[in-house]
Image (cartoon, rainbow, N blue to C red; front, side, top):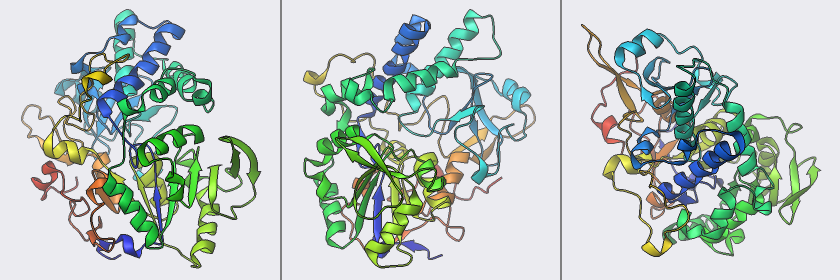
Amino acid sequence: MAQHFSLAACDVVGFDLDHTLCRYNLPESALLIYNSFAQFLVKEKGYDKELLTVTPEDWDFCCKGLALDLEDGNFIKLADNGTVLRASHGTKMMAPEVLAEEYGRKEWKHFMSDAGMACRSGKYYFYDNYFDLPGALLCARVVDSLTKRNNGQKTFDFWKDIVAGIQHNYKMSAFKENCGIYFPEIKRDPGRYLHTCPESVKKWLQQLKNAGKILLLITSSHSDYCRLLCEYILGNDFTDLFDIVITNALKPGFFSHSPNQRPFWTLENDEEQEALPSLDKPGWYSQGNAVHLYELLKKMTGKNEPKVVYFGDSMHSDIFPARHYSNWETVLILEELRGDRDGKPEESEPLEKKGKYEGQKAKPLNTLSKKWGSFFIDSVSGLENTEDSLFYTWSCKRISTYSTIAIPSIEAIAELPLDYKFSRFSSSNSKTAGYYPNPPLILSNNETLTTK
């Protein structure tokens, strides 16, 4: 494979929406998401009212790449070889000797080879994106509460209530019905939670169109919410930018499931109408599958193997499946690159924006967690007569394995010429090659680190 990647060589440029084209004001959106679940658990399921109060310090628990063991209430951070680097029971971090006793130096019991490892199963849940992270904090606090109430309870059965909260707040009809807390609040004050696309990004999208690229939008958000976001961040004429818009894509199934399992649906007034045996023309659709989409892209480009690049923020839903199942080029939006470099807080809202969900602000979720350490590299805490040893995290390994490049935001590349040659992640390049404009500082400082 070539050592460089260029957008000019791509026929089709696809985008995820949430946290990719649409950037959120993370401290505000995190608190809103947390509240949407906490209020449901307390009011509908009888959980402790303490869950409703969250302090600024609590947010330090949030870190991408954690797994929650749904049976024992433990959160873990994995090394690239499947061993456990850090762990907590609820929000309480395990001391090195407890960690060694609980997990030792062996593979975590649910660890599988990279390709075979799901992010969601009946036994564990991986926290992979900024919509997920407030739920990690809430679940950890639920474990704290249940452990205290039930004298050190060892097994837990709260996940069904979390799923019920997801269904209540985010079901397909929730936006239309003004159901739950999340959608009504976003509709009420989108400027509080969303950042509009900078002019540089809008011009870049038009530049791609002018260069003859086919532009796709593939989002798991439902059609009505997608429309609100796009109109707010790009303007009312946003549909002129995209040849094909696919909502309710239910990724990663969009990439992994066969066409007969996941047909495309036509839409009318943002509601699904009829299933399609194939995809024959550009337009706005719901659900669907990558196989039928690719057949349409062949027709539109007149090429047998059109080259597709897909931008997304979720390794689980976007990057891994687009690369693994469809063999697309992939650009990972990794805001941790922003937090790693400057550590500056997210833009704060003016005073007149303060309102209903003011509460205690979250730290920006893209900044370093004191509890969990670096997203990229970590050490196993040394016990007696041993030295600390550094490991790449499982999350970091997946970035270099499945991403073509990783960038902090689309804005970071919007003013580059389309034929700019990016160094790509590859086995022949260094571990830091694919990060643009700069690799994480901690990786730069440990570039000689070998995979354990």
